[in-house]
Length: 418
Image 1 (cartoon, rainbow, N blue to C red):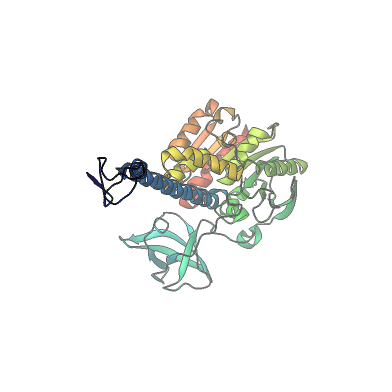
Image 2 (image 1 turned 45 degrees about the horizontal axis):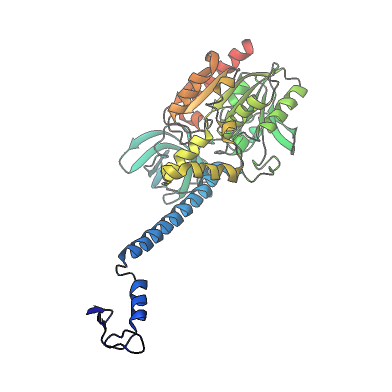
């Protein structure tokens, strides 16, 4: 006799009726045998399989969601069309007597000259007077409005606001370069000679206002300066694409600016740009064809390998290594960029004009190892590298204005003399 699922079955022949072998409860044995063989006597392996499959499905769903979230975040951080806005997230702890006290953060303890803004006031912070584990006290000057303890403020690299006349009493003219998308407005500051400096702003400041920091030094040397706008920066026409291309498309607006300068009498140009602007200049050097007018370029904080930057960001976001190629591919397709076209390290051998490369040691997008690799890969010692301790792209002037201006002016005047 055997017992299964509460039933007792007979293994013998007694209890047969109408040709069926019956158990003690009268169930035909053929039916019992079918039931017995259809049921798994040990269901746990099947349950393990179900658990594993469900776990895998949940893991795939979680990782897939994370990949999508990352592609959205990287879009905001790197591929958003418009200039990055800095939030008012610093509390003023105290102010008075030409001093201001702020919580100690990476931003508030960064050396140099910076603007400070609340919703209703503007000013500047300079040298650090004292620093503790939790607070930083700095030299301070209000330039508009009043600051009080408890105000929410932000620190910016732009220390002058408005146009050259409003901010610096420098006479300028608004001119217009014709690009493939339409009219790109620009500031033109007159100077002597036939070599123009064309400045291309980045994404981390106030657009053309970035140039106001070092415009007086260029003006003092009597250099003609053209400060341009380009697609999707809020002044020039919007690009058809929904994202910036890190030079992939923006170089066409530099071509329009060079063409405008030549039409106004420029024989040579020095292209000068920060972060996205620097990348657009680099792509212009690859794509423009005739570089006869280009005497040299000044590049502040370019992203030298966009794909590597995306991959590092994916790792920091927690994307597993095995999924990063897929993540990189998704970003490439979503934002319409061919990685090899914007890999300036791989294309370093193609550069054949003098380059002044200004790099910050805290650049979150391009580590110093990549900067040094690029500088070494450009042929014929064409790169002059100047580094700024603690500097970020678009704000290297703020860290040390004297070193910054001296490096730029020495480079430009050397090009003019050559």
